[in-house]
Image 1 (cartoon, rainbow, N blue to C red):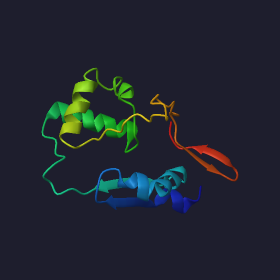
Image 2 (cartoon, rainbow, N blue to C red):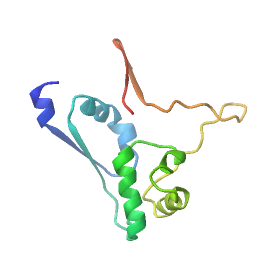
Image 3 (tube, rainbow, N blue to C red):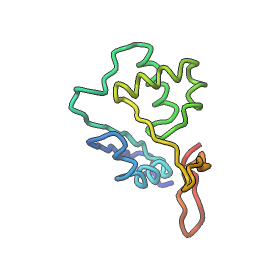
Image 4 (cartoon, one colour):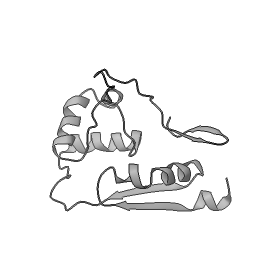
Amino acid sequence: MSPKARTSGLLLVHAHPDDECFATGGLIARSIAEGRRVDLVVCTGGEEGEVHDPALDGFLNALVAEFRTLPFAERWAYRLDSRAPALLNQLVRRRVAMTYPALLDVGGGIVSQAEHTMIVGAAGADVTTA
């Protein structure tokens, strides 16, 4: 890692939640791998997505600290708070968090999904999640 990579950072500003997954996901992964700090700002109109409940705000902060902006399974949030299902439902209703449907195969069965994100290149694969 170069000295410049350790001292420089990246600020990404996106209009909608999950835009970073499609627009700059690779840049985020590479920057983190190079040791850069990455901050993400998601802009909204202010009419949705606000949290004014201390318990919910604490849970949201714990989610961000644990998963950043990466997708996560609901079961992973239980270790942060035993009330995870109820708290996640509140965050989804307030449009602070979003859900993704399970991936189904042609026959309607649930597809087994890897629990890590990897970048595959000519030199091999790099796991970008813990």
